[in-house]
Length: 115
Image (tube, rainbow, N blue to C red; front, side):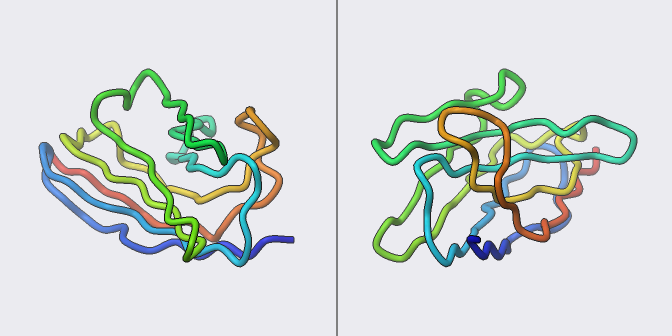
């Protein structure tokens, strides 16, 4: 089982930026982020495969960028042009290859965007 620890959440004004980090004890073929807001369904946000290919939710395409530092088993999510609707708890996850189904996840980090 992989251990995942997120950091970098916080509160920001709409239009601002945040960078989330995730330290992983090991990595799987597909790693990424999903989010969940109160009363809403879980939403896959971004994932990256070991070959560097990426997939984004339509709602964040062009604003969010996922990257990884393989040498340090660290995953990042750069979030720009944040909107109030991006407010959620963000979870780092090891996904089943090429899917949004999480096999392991971290404890999550809260992102709050105020308008």
